[in-house]
Length: 423
Image 1 (spheres, rainbow, N blue to C red):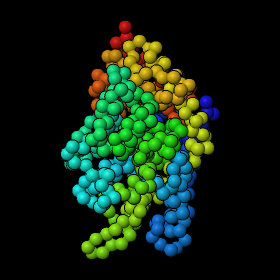
Image 2: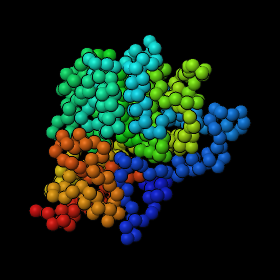
Image 3: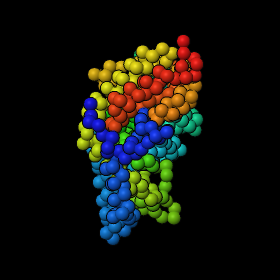
Image 4: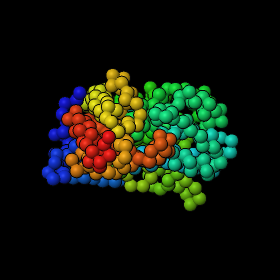
């Protein structure tokens, strides 16, 4: 287990309902920020604020250096080169960047280099049934606009991916396979190798949603073998409004941009424009410099802790949350309990309480100072497949303690009695 890190996170010191101590268990939605992140962002604005790559004065130089140093730090966290990391406003924007770039290619942009991204009738896009909406809707839209077919790898009755269906779903017609590294509902970590292996057999591009893995697990993009990966800053202890797209350099340089403006260009005439190489070709307009600096501070904070240590810590929290839920009468855990030693499940538990709506469960917990997520967690198809409309999710991060996990289980045990539906 990690040491108690709550003193590093100022917000966790506040009290909430009726003076209760805050038990923050909504990190799967957004993580709290350590002082190192708050101070880094503040220091940039106080001491170095300037426009990136737009001036020869000292503040512009310092801002540009901070911006590119931040890129290098975030790249280091995932085992990448800095020229493979594109800044975006978040993971949703990163996935849309890829899907919209493929749409541009399908409309004829990018020339011969973009041929691999062009889609049309007869082509297939593959996702999974457990995707967050951010990694489903952009591909639905791309299929609708290009005439490609959208298919998906199904889940079983427990919400686990049907790996026995991978070969049948990822056909030779498949051009793109987009899937989550870890589910934000079941917490299960995906067997990336199994999907990447099949995608390579048919020559498909792989796009990984790393939102739930990068903040919690050791992630090395070279070892994963995917072509592109999206992840966000706010889930990994960083600021909101910042995220990143990692991609193999040769793929990024060939993908047409879909947003246009200054900073991304090489030559502009009244008739045409040529683009810079990646990552700059995807970063037009005013840059989120302070947010990038904050995201880099979060990356350094996590690297200082050691991602193996983070994963082991959260696996222990997962064990308490999930085993406590499984043993509770009238409570259904979505997904399997998992083996903490294997680190094959995130530190979260999504539950359904018999006879009680998820929002009502959340209200009871909130009255005790325990913050959780309620609803479908932007994963309606998965909840529908599991036969429920929503769930109550407790999710952990590096600052979550065993006492926090036990407090959730204790409060959850009182919910059915509170509403008069206990057996």
